[in-house]
Amino acid sequence: MSEFKIFFSKRIKEIIVVGILSFLMILLVQCNHAYPSNVQFKNGDLLFVTAKESGLSGAINNVTQKQKAASFDHIGILEKKGNRIFVLHAAPKGGSQKQNLKDFIKDQKEDGQEVIVYRLKPEYQKAIPEAVKKANSMLGKPYNFNYILDENSYYCSDFVERAFRAENIFKLEPMTFIDPKTGKTNTFWEEFYTKKNLKVPEGAPGCNPNGLAGSEKLDRINKL
Image 1: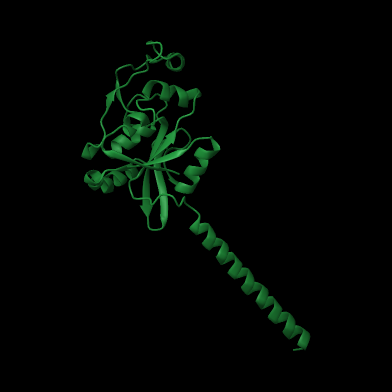
Image 2: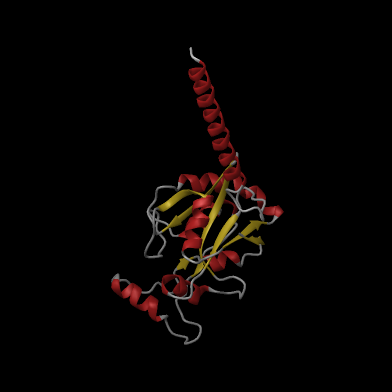
């Protein structure tokens, strides 16, 4: 083999080695920055998504907000599996699903919303393994666009309440669609159910993200 061929062969090997090392470094950096570093996640953490001021999000918040610091329209359960982290939740797009945490956070940020981490207090942590197991068993169910409880579809807080139901972590309460400012049914919800040929389910059992966030069994941890 000529000196040129030997040199060329060595050069190709060097380029390949450098390329592989660069690729591994990129993967390492991505792994280190895949998730926010300001929170040490725990299995069973609850991720609450802040509400918007208008549309469905604003309408949900309008009739359910109980605390000034809690203004949410969505919730999911965090599941840790080794080095991987997922969010178990029920959403209009995709129904009851398991989503990578990074993608979950990205979706909320693209909609201009933030994610707040809550955690069950130590005395209630024992409920988490069965809750996560139950949540996984509900995956694949469609989203409940009527927000009236049934066994064939779920909305976000309904999904979470069911997951923790065996340990009575949360509870169903009479739903209200009354605008606190007017004392009358919120216009959005009046039109919403009229289009569906349904009566506004005032007083029917249900739950909502703001109600769950107000539970004394939870601690607010941090914003992502």
